[in-house]
Amino acid sequence: MNPVLKYLKHLFAGQRILGNESALNGLVKADGLLQDLIDDKKIPGLAISVRKEGQPILQKGYGYSDLDNKVYVDPKATIFRIASVSKPIAATALAHMVKDGHINLDQSFYQYVPYFPKKEWDFTIRQLAGHTAGLRSYRGMEYALNKPFTIKESLEIFKNDALQFKPGAAYHYNSFDWVLISLAMQEASGIPFENYVQEKVLGPLGMTNTYIPERQQGEKHTTDHASNNKVLTVPDEARVTSFYSKNRFGFRKAIEVNNFYKLAGGGYLSTVEDIAKLGQAYLEGTVMDSEILSQFTTMETINGTPTYYGLGWQVSQDKKGRPYFGHVGNGVGGYANFYVYPEEQMVFAILINCTDPKVQGQLDEVIETLVSIYASSA
Image (tube, rainbow, N blue to C red):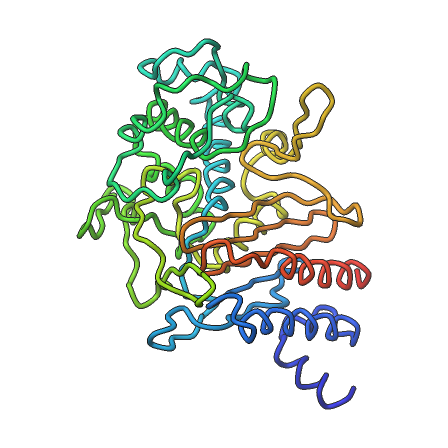
């Protein structure tokens, strides 16, 4: 093996499981594509974690978590806003609630939240989870609210609006669906949504670097003394990335937002390592009974037309027909990719500290490079 590839084999320690030059060359290409995003000033910082059969094959930080102070991204410790990658976390918690018999996916939402204003049509938890209930999406600057709403208080934003269509008749992606689901989960369980997620998902899966945002200025954390789990935690500021937006003049600090109320749809903060743990748990079948989970990761259809969405999970095939499930997230100061390839036994978690940086094409190329090479090496 030539000296460069020998060096890279040590750099990408996960190559011990495959160890061929083709795979190493793929890692070099992926690494170069990601570094180009920093060098070309398309993003301030990025972290990636890629697993193959449970082994990390690429876990690395690029660029800065803090541009002003030149703090580098640490893939193990740097905490990002994960935006809509929060939905698979919430969906996993919802699956537990279904398993425990607290929620029926095909029951009316009003069974759990009877005080929500009645609409022209009834709708179910399943329809909310699959974005076929007819709720509207954000208007204007609603995606960037900076108000300390509780989940219940946030109903004021959209509760009086009519449904856009008869539930089940169409697909319309939005985060308000998951605001309602998280409220239904609170009412059904009798405990705060974030406590339930901590107890059923984050704790058992070892996602110790996944946090919720503070609801009010100055609020630090409370502790669930019964379980000794941190449930309202603001992580060490040194570990939380700065959040940026981009314009033609470069990067600037993103506007202040408060995402507590939409925790289930887009509020969590996490690391790539933690997100990869979630994907790996699905591959290994350690979350729960597969019969329940399969409902969440199976693509739904409307009159025979695919929605490319399950329940809280995007479900599709890549351009070469390889099936995957996962989620893309875009929020103020954060952009995320999370994909699970069951046939290739691969997990991808990519987090960026910038609002919609317009780099999905490059991220797709990185993922395609690694999936193609590792699939052929299997």
